[in-house]
Image 1 (spheres, rainbow, N blue to C red):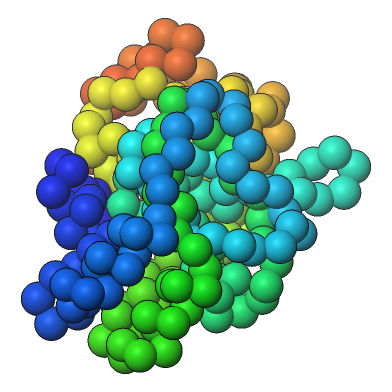
Image 2 (cartoon, one colour):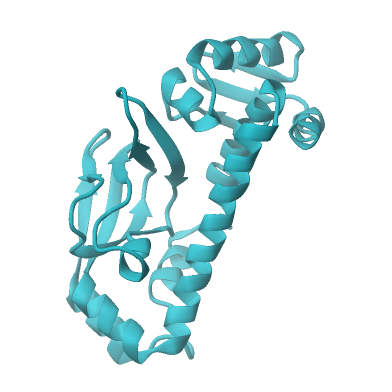
Length: 228
Protein backbone atom coordinates (compact mmCIF):
# COMPACT_ATOMS: atom_id res chain seq x y z
CA UNK A 1 0.00 0.00 0.00
CA UNK A 2 1.37 3.40 -0.99
CA UNK A 3 0.76 6.15 1.56
CA UNK A 4 0.11 9.34 -0.36
CA UNK A 5 0.26 12.03 2.32
CA UNK A 6 1.59 12.77 5.80
CA UNK A 7 -1.80 12.18 7.40
CA UNK A 8 -1.86 8.62 6.02
CA UNK A 9 1.70 8.08 7.25
CA UNK A 10 1.15 9.28 10.82
CA UNK A 11 -2.18 7.48 11.10
CA UNK A 12 -0.19 4.31 10.50
CA UNK A 13 2.39 5.22 13.15
CA UNK A 14 -0.24 6.32 15.67
CA UNK A 15 -3.44 4.46 14.67
CA UNK A 16 -6.32 5.90 16.63
CA UNK A 17 -9.81 4.55 17.13
CA UNK A 18 -9.81 1.25 18.96
CA UNK A 19 -6.17 0.31 18.23
CA UNK A 20 -4.17 2.75 20.37
CA UNK A 21 -5.44 4.82 23.27
CA UNK A 22 -4.52 8.50 23.61
CA UNK A 23 -2.31 7.56 26.56
CA UNK A 24 -0.41 4.98 24.50
CA UNK A 25 0.03 7.44 21.62
CA UNK A 26 1.47 9.95 24.08
CA UNK A 27 3.82 7.28 25.42
CA UNK A 28 5.15 6.63 21.92
CA UNK A 29 5.58 10.34 21.24
CA UNK A 30 7.29 11.09 24.56
CA UNK A 31 9.68 8.17 24.16
CA UNK A 32 10.33 8.82 20.49
CA UNK A 33 12.39 11.23 18.42
CA UNK A 34 12.60 12.17 14.74
CA UNK A 35 16.11 11.99 13.25
CA UNK A 36 17.23 13.38 9.89
CA UNK A 37 19.58 11.34 7.69
CA UNK A 38 21.53 12.44 4.66
CA UNK A 39 21.82 10.36 1.50
CA UNK A 40 24.10 7.34 2.10
CA UNK A 41 23.97 7.70 5.90
CA UNK A 42 23.92 4.39 7.79
CA UNK A 43 20.83 4.03 9.98
CA UNK A 44 21.85 0.72 11.54
CA UNK A 45 24.11 -2.22 10.75
CA UNK A 46 23.44 -5.93 10.59
CA UNK A 47 24.18 -7.89 13.79
CA UNK A 48 24.09 -4.84 16.07
CA UNK A 49 21.75 -4.86 19.06
CA UNK A 50 18.30 -3.40 18.67
CA UNK A 51 17.51 -0.49 20.99
CA UNK A 52 14.74 1.20 19.01
CA UNK A 53 11.91 0.53 16.62
CA UNK A 54 12.11 2.91 13.67
CA UNK A 55 9.42 4.32 11.43
CA UNK A 56 10.17 5.94 8.07
CA UNK A 57 8.61 9.40 7.97
CA UNK A 58 10.25 10.74 4.80
CA UNK A 59 12.61 9.49 2.11
CA UNK A 60 13.72 6.05 0.95
CA UNK A 61 15.73 3.49 2.94
CA UNK A 62 17.68 0.56 1.47
CA UNK A 63 17.43 -2.64 3.52
CA UNK A 64 20.11 -5.18 2.69
CA UNK A 65 21.79 -8.25 4.10
CA UNK A 66 25.55 -8.61 3.89
CA UNK A 67 26.83 -11.72 2.17
CA UNK A 68 30.24 -13.17 1.50
CA UNK A 69 32.86 -11.86 -0.93
CA UNK A 70 31.75 -8.23 -0.55
CA UNK A 71 28.32 -9.07 -1.93
CA UNK A 72 24.97 -8.09 -0.46
CA UNK A 73 21.32 -8.89 -1.03
CA UNK A 74 18.93 -5.96 -1.20
CA UNK A 75 15.77 -7.05 0.58
CA UNK A 76 13.58 -4.01 0.15
CA UNK A 77 13.33 -0.29 -0.47
CA UNK A 78 11.49 1.07 2.57
CA UNK A 79 9.14 3.99 1.87
CA UNK A 80 7.37 6.41 4.26
CA UNK A 81 5.02 4.45 6.50
CA UNK A 82 7.35 1.46 6.92
CA UNK A 83 8.50 0.11 10.30
CA UNK A 84 12.16 -0.85 10.68
CA UNK A 85 13.20 -3.39 13.29
CA UNK A 86 9.88 -5.12 13.98
CA UNK A 87 11.41 -8.52 13.31
CA UNK A 88 13.83 -7.87 16.18
CA UNK A 89 10.93 -7.51 18.62
CA UNK A 90 9.30 -10.77 17.61
CA UNK A 91 12.30 -12.75 16.41
CA UNK A 92 15.78 -11.66 17.44
CA UNK A 93 17.41 -8.99 19.59
CA UNK A 94 19.90 -8.06 16.87
CA UNK A 95 19.26 -6.57 13.46
CA UNK A 96 19.18 -9.20 10.72
CA UNK A 97 19.96 -6.67 7.99
CA UNK A 98 21.47 -3.21 7.52
CA UNK A 99 19.76 0.02 6.52
CA UNK A 100 21.08 3.09 4.72
CA UNK A 101 19.38 6.20 3.37
CA UNK A 102 19.03 6.26 -0.42
CA UNK A 103 18.04 9.92 -0.26
CA UNK A 104 17.67 12.52 2.48
CA UNK A 105 15.31 10.85 4.92
CA UNK A 106 13.55 11.29 8.25
CA UNK A 107 13.09 8.41 10.69
CA UNK A 108 11.13 8.32 13.95
CA UNK A 109 12.93 6.33 16.69
CA UNK A 110 10.89 4.73 19.49
CA UNK A 111 12.47 3.19 22.59
CA UNK A 112 12.11 -0.57 22.21
CA UNK A 113 11.12 -1.12 25.87
CA UNK A 114 8.26 1.37 25.58
CA UNK A 115 7.18 -0.23 22.33
CA UNK A 116 7.33 -3.75 23.78
CA UNK A 117 5.31 -2.67 26.83
CA UNK A 118 2.51 -1.34 24.64
CA UNK A 119 2.49 -4.54 22.58
CA UNK A 120 2.23 -6.65 25.74
CA UNK A 121 -0.81 -4.69 26.88
CA UNK A 122 -2.51 -4.12 23.53
CA UNK A 123 -3.44 -7.20 21.54
CA UNK A 124 -5.02 -5.21 18.70
CA UNK A 125 -1.86 -3.20 18.13
CA UNK A 126 0.21 -6.41 18.23
CA UNK A 127 -2.02 -7.98 15.57
CA UNK A 128 -1.86 -4.76 13.52
CA UNK A 129 1.95 -4.93 13.48
CA UNK A 130 2.05 -8.70 12.99
CA UNK A 131 0.02 -8.21 9.81
CA UNK A 132 2.62 -5.69 8.65
CA UNK A 133 5.38 -8.26 9.20
CA UNK A 134 3.41 -10.96 7.36
CA UNK A 135 2.71 -8.72 4.36
CA UNK A 136 6.35 -7.72 4.17
CA UNK A 137 7.55 -11.32 4.46
CA UNK A 138 5.20 -12.42 1.67
CA UNK A 139 6.45 -9.64 -0.61
CA UNK A 140 10.09 -10.63 -0.03
CA UNK A 141 9.14 -14.30 -0.50
CA UNK A 142 7.43 -13.59 -3.83
CA UNK A 143 10.36 -11.52 -5.07
CA UNK A 144 12.83 -14.25 -4.07
CA UNK A 145 10.81 -16.87 -5.96
CA UNK A 146 10.72 -14.52 -8.96
CA UNK A 147 14.51 -14.22 -8.95
CA UNK A 148 14.93 -17.99 -9.13
CA UNK A 149 12.10 -18.87 -11.52
CA UNK A 150 11.94 -16.05 -14.04
CA UNK A 151 14.10 -15.27 -17.03
CA UNK A 152 15.84 -11.89 -17.30
CA UNK A 153 13.01 -10.04 -19.11
CA UNK A 154 10.58 -11.10 -16.38
CA UNK A 155 13.00 -10.04 -13.63
CA UNK A 156 13.59 -6.61 -15.19
CA UNK A 157 9.84 -6.15 -15.71
CA UNK A 158 9.32 -6.94 -12.02
CA UNK A 159 11.84 -4.30 -10.97
CA UNK A 160 10.28 -1.66 -13.22
CA UNK A 161 6.83 -2.45 -11.79
CA UNK A 162 8.26 -2.41 -8.26
CA UNK A 163 9.49 1.15 -8.59
CA UNK A 164 6.50 2.34 -10.63
CA UNK A 165 3.73 0.88 -8.48
CA UNK A 166 5.19 0.31 -5.01
CA UNK A 167 7.79 3.06 -4.64
CA UNK A 168 6.75 6.06 -6.75
CA UNK A 169 3.15 5.36 -7.81
CA UNK A 170 4.05 6.74 -11.23
CA UNK A 171 5.00 5.40 -14.65
CA UNK A 172 7.72 8.06 -14.84
CA UNK A 173 10.48 7.92 -12.24
CA UNK A 174 14.21 8.05 -11.57
CA UNK A 175 16.00 4.92 -10.37
CA UNK A 176 17.31 5.81 -6.87
CA UNK A 177 19.99 3.11 -6.98
CA UNK A 178 23.19 2.49 -8.93
CA UNK A 179 23.17 -0.08 -11.73
CA UNK A 180 25.08 -2.44 -9.46
CA UNK A 181 22.50 -2.06 -6.67
CA UNK A 182 19.66 -2.55 -9.15
CA UNK A 183 21.32 -5.79 -10.27
CA UNK A 184 21.55 -6.92 -6.63
CA UNK A 185 17.87 -6.11 -6.15
CA UNK A 186 17.01 -8.03 -9.32
CA UNK A 187 19.18 -11.02 -8.51
CA UNK A 188 21.38 -10.85 -11.58
CA UNK A 189 24.71 -9.39 -12.72
CA UNK A 190 25.25 -5.74 -13.51
CA UNK A 191 26.07 -6.58 -17.14
CA UNK A 192 22.94 -8.67 -17.62
CA UNK A 193 20.78 -6.00 -16.00
CA UNK A 194 22.13 -3.22 -18.23
CA UNK A 195 21.83 -5.35 -21.39
CA UNK A 196 18.22 -6.36 -20.72
CA UNK A 197 17.19 -2.84 -19.70
CA UNK A 198 18.69 -1.58 -22.98
CA UNK A 199 16.63 -4.15 -24.86
CA UNK A 200 13.49 -2.76 -23.22
CA UNK A 201 14.56 0.66 -24.44
CA UNK A 202 15.32 -0.51 -27.96
CA UNK A 203 11.94 -2.25 -28.14
CA UNK A 204 10.26 1.05 -27.13
CA UNK A 205 8.77 -0.55 -24.02
CA UNK A 206 10.39 2.18 -21.94
CA UNK A 207 12.27 5.40 -22.44
CA UNK A 208 15.62 5.45 -20.67
CA UNK A 209 17.99 8.34 -20.11
CA UNK A 210 20.57 7.59 -17.44
CA UNK A 211 18.47 6.82 -14.35
CA UNK A 212 15.32 8.40 -15.79
CA UNK A 213 12.64 5.91 -16.81
CA UNK A 214 9.33 6.41 -18.57
CA UNK A 215 7.12 3.39 -19.19
CA UNK A 216 5.62 3.56 -22.67
CA UNK A 217 3.67 0.30 -22.46
CA UNK A 218 2.67 -0.82 -18.99
CA UNK A 219 0.70 -3.65 -20.59
CA UNK A 220 3.85 -5.16 -22.09
CA UNK A 221 5.77 -4.75 -18.83
CA UNK A 222 3.00 -6.51 -16.90
CA UNK A 223 2.82 -9.28 -19.50
CA UNK A 224 6.58 -9.86 -19.33
CA UNK A 225 6.36 -9.94 -15.54
CA UNK A 226 3.52 -12.45 -15.65
CA UNK A 227 5.02 -14.88 -18.17
CA UNK A 228 8.48 -14.58 -16.66
